[in-house]
Length: 294
Ligand SMILES: [Fe+2]
Ligand SMILES: [Fe+2]
Image 1: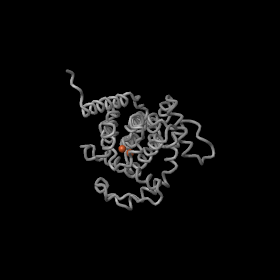
Image 2: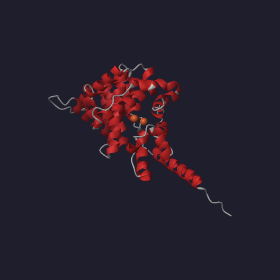
Image 3: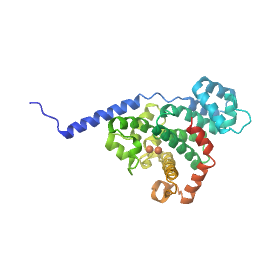
Image 4: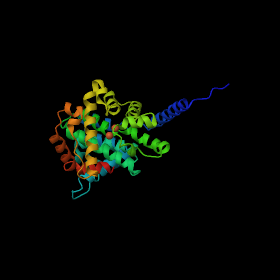
């Protein structure tokens, strides 16, 4: 006689198939363009502008985005930025690297699509700018790692969102109310966006520090020798979430750095959190707006 599967076994099987399906969707994402890495290596070797220009001009999509970004950040100029060369000179090394990574990352966020994707992209941009504010003086290599990790730390959510819509008839934002989003995602879909981010970034052959920052940003203590950079992404992510919640609910409670051990480790005080917030709102607001609309 054929044994019937128990409800528990059917459930387990269902989860196993669902997780397999989600992972295979993640693995099908197109490879991450390496133009940003090439730009950093040219900038580091102090290559002439025309070499950087030739590299960027080779990729029409990236070139168009860089021009658009230069025009929106320097909108006050009398004449628009018309050539890639002018954009490179105007943006400077740091912004150029940031814009190039952002231009590559937007491929996966489907800008202009759903509200969820737009919100996720805006959150990623704010997280990237906050890493810059918190880390201050960083080398080009660090900047590349920080920006890339920040812009892609929630990449797993782009895939999970799709599955949440199909299987749960809801979106991830509805899960956001839960205090532990990672656990809520695992319970509902069998896998969370951190683990998926690890799979995706490993598939893209990202260096191990970058994979770790994406894979452990909610639990930097699990990042081993990459704990420092992962903690930085964790801090920027937590601040970006709390600032946007504060904006949504005017007069909402400000973030308490005492409540998070990672903030304590970096000696981030309430006053510093307020400084980061006002710097993002004032000094970085034009850049944030321009990057968010890429
Ligand atoms: Fe996250
Ligand atoms: Fe996040």
